[in-house]
Length: 184
Image (cartoon, rainbow, N blue to C red):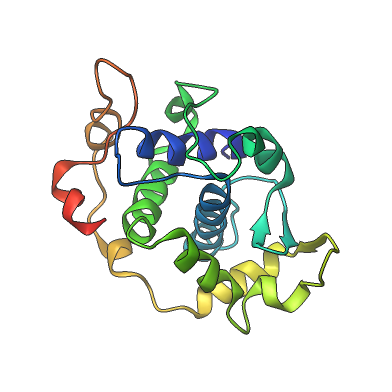
């Protein structure tokens, strides 16, 4: 099982070399929610990480992640804590994260917020203004199981080299394959 901070570092690192991807605290928390949801749905209830999401005003949030990145405010997060975060992912977890990034990176942050705020979402079921209610994992799983399978999730599994092999040699940051650039 992954640590939530390693998963957050994966999403932040993927954006560091992309001037068009403004990975903010809000955005990383939404991507974490989609990653957890698809993990629960695709892996028969197995969470990607143990941390709970809370229903905050701007959607599902993991408080530890929020507090880690709050210094950036609404600006792009500029660095990761653990540059070797990907060493902690199984091949299955790495594939899931790549799938989520590929499927959701094309949406604006406000678009991601809109997706989490729709009627019937796990967030909408427990949200109360200014109350930090936990979003139950069983509700997240049921919701994502009810969604149509995203096209990117039917892709063939990438090899380990497709994941690890895309680290920029100068910066050490993870870079998406060039053929995905037009999908952002």
